[in-house]
Image (spheres, rainbow, N blue to C red):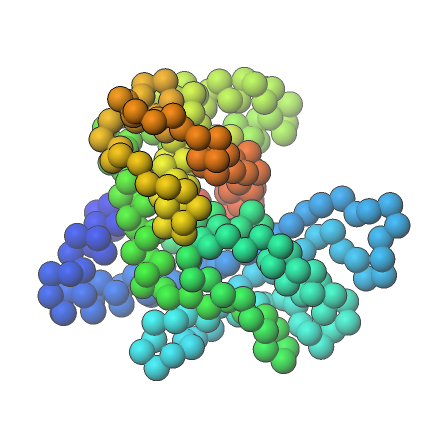
Length: 287
């Protein structure tokens, strides 16, 4: 499996027969679900007169802790840091719960990321649910459905890179950030290097291709009913790959705003994860 694209065994071979399905699902569960982490992170300036126990830094990490059902479909990811039994941590959990309720779009939240198998993404399980126990908080979701969506997105990325010649530059983005932080180059110079290496101006500061994220956001918008369907994307405009060539209807303001939502914030968040991984000499973020 290591010599194949990450998505290939699951997307192409899992449905061949029951034996293949079980073996492939066991492999992905072991290497992708166990050891992955859901992060809730929000760093914001404190107000001039913060209330008692207020914290502008809300960080919680959730890891796999078991299943919610007997069929072992619904995975439970339990919080590791904050406890309801501690007064200060309790206030943090209340703030996190309010923050999650304020933005309830299925499949996406600006302050939640999923770190999984040498990658980090803002693509969340569409059925992600938040809950509390007597001592901590947790998330639940159907892990098979999520992996099907995630691995299909990786297939889209590989196919897009192969057909366009554009390439994600995750590692280069980290190296350039170090140079910017050390005052060896400016932010503009770093972006120029990223654009040249990626082969497109539509690249985020994290080295990921913006066209891919916009296409994914559009598909998510259709799935959850935020956007209306339009003709199949057979070919793309060379100036803006988000717009299909020959598309008869104008891209609406809603579509553009939805697909461009939080681009810079997400890019900065994902780049920070890659930098932290690099600093910790952990497994390098690759996608």
